[in-house]
Length: 230
Image: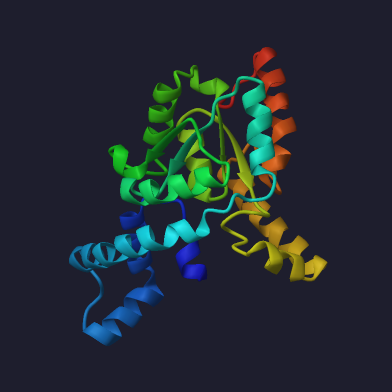
């Protein structure tokens, strides 16, 4: 699980490519098949993985706690919501209706397969800005739960907020988080926060609901002439 999660947020074929390049994975593959996995194997793995993800993603569309209320609050202020994702368009076409049925439907969704390259490149952010007719980029905020999210936002010239408690790096269901000893949870979250801050995140929060006052603070910083990039 740890090997898989470290590349979450990337376009899925690139995700598989990075996993195959891990020394331990490459060694295990070579021990079984006689050689390390190459681009042909990456393509075959991706071809087998995409239909499985399309079939599976609809079972994991429940919004994280606080998301719907937070989005509603932003929309009441005229803030539009765009999404970038490592999923391909067929995956999103399966996921979007399931998420909408539970109350979440962003104003724009851009997939890694819609642009020349996915994260950490900024192209999905740029495409969202066009679809939302939102500019300048320094007035946009990128919120994500992976290191590639942070890199994507910074590369696009946006403010970045890293989410840790309900995010990929912790990688636990809500009931699993509740079952962790408090000291262990605190230690895990501190380690994730450290990685996000080292990656350049402007802010790090526990969950999406904690982003609302930060977006207000970013607005104040913009009014003072501050910008996300030096």
